[in-house]
Image (tube, rainbow, N blue to C red):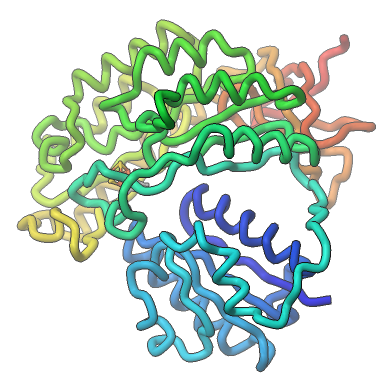
Length: 421
Ligand code: 5AD
Ligand code: SF4
């Protein structure tokens, strides 16, 4: 039996693409393995958002090229594959195919050309370890934030027809999936013949057996009241909004081409909290953007203190060739960018811990995720927002939803006990 090994860098969209490829290879008889040295195909799914992510992937690909079986395939897919293309084969000997992010739609044809002698043997019967899965509802991005490479590597926005999505999700639910995360760079631009994203949520919510719906990412400029109202009214929708702010200063937001002011962003947050007072709100923040002054960075800190995100992804600006910001004069030294990042991470970590600590004694509704390998009674779980939890229970399975009490909090994990019914 042939084996495939996956290494996925980057965002959840890459995770979704890797899962998709894994399914397609599964249909051709390939089983996933945890050991790259044992694999017949090694797939490295790459991210180009920051230079560091590309460097890490290249080192890892080099390692796989050395340890792989002589005849094994080594495929590089995703955003860096799109950006650098066939050059990667020359740069890292041993790479046998480069499949860019934009080609993922034609993945079946590509696999057929790369594995010409493989016939489809059986329909993939994927064992469900976790009842949660991702589905990309749109691809590409038309926002052209000044720092971001994504529109160049992933191309223009296009929405996947709702009928295809509903069919895909229904099939997943039949195999045991109970929670779906709908993915797009900007889900609020979703549009399929008049079906917008809130309409899509309503259609997905109608699928019997599906218990939870999550989604990411919303661009603040078009995070609509209709979306938030739909979330609030649909019990299957988790109370979590990921709303990347990037910066707290209007001048920096303008340079970034984000098309909202800090005041408009604050209004969106107020609207979300009005509809869903206990929602978890999370964000992405970028510090050290070219010419960001210390005072402007302080505006970001002030906004973080005020909004109190449950968690945040925080980054130091990294120049991406070909983007608008790559041509901006940058007066912020690298050490200063890293120092700002440390300050921000320290602040946000304190806030995250306080928010978690405040959950002690609360009642939560958990969905079980994966079972712990070592202590088999312990399950990783998630509450109805985005908080992680740990709960011990017997006779359980992934996807089960149960009521629980937070008995204590350990850092960023809620330690829970099942509430007697
Ligand atoms: N440098 C640093 N962070 C970046 N991001 C996007 N481009 C860059 C860059 N050039 C961050 C943004 C975005 C997240 C996915 O990655 O915060 O929201
Ligand atoms: Fe990049 Fe901006 Fe598009 Fe997000 S919205 S993918 S940050 S260009």
